[in-house]
Image (cartoon, rainbow, N blue to C red; front, side, top):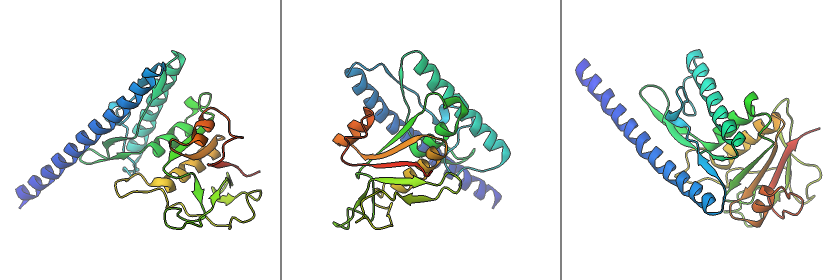
Length: 244
């Protein structure tokens, strides 16, 4: 019975590690395509891959024991040092959500939103991170799911209570926008990283750390303007800032 149980554990571990390997291969190909496009446009971009490349880096939801926490903090510090080194050299570091170890026997996902939280919270990145722009498949945060409700209204600005983390619709927003929001609109069956809800949680952390935050739609003119630093002329997107 003990031998059978051990065999079952080993089989599950092999399956987990196979999934980790294939997922990492997939996201690294996507990252390479992004870096290639930037290079084609004259940007000196370089790939920095987290996950198992950094000892101690753990997937979202890993054990919270002190040893694991210390390892994850040390790994995030290493990632920040790599990013800063690339920036100091005049390179544009391109990192990505990754598959990595959950513990010694299981694999999990280290999503880009989780990485954002780690970066904005790091003392090592305080001089190099000023704004966070989340690119989504919808134009921002809405009063309800715009894919289901054609009357859903875009919320242009949200305020965060930095003490409690509570998110509030800005009083200066359109009077016709109801004082409620729905963050379920940007999610897919294949997305295991939390969709727009996870982005909003990470946005709260970023604002609490003193960063400007924007959520905008991928490939939109507004997203381009936000990236260029021209927030005033962007026609869509949701700005998230500190409640005064």
